Length: 85
Image (cartoon, rainbow, N blue to C red):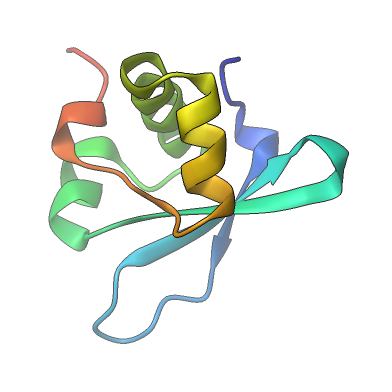
């Protein structure tokens, strides 16, 4: 399922930590994804940018694997998740 901007909410970023986003999942569950500032420079930081990158991650890793990661340790987005330009 492609992710949408309305499912993404940025969490307060620690001074030297990664950007962290809550991801609204079915049944009122929240998942978590994160990315470094270097990755954010490639992907973008807008909720729509994160949704596209997370959808790309899901294409590569599968729906169930992605859901498991989001609800577990969290998904670490990388530059490979950026949309092709």
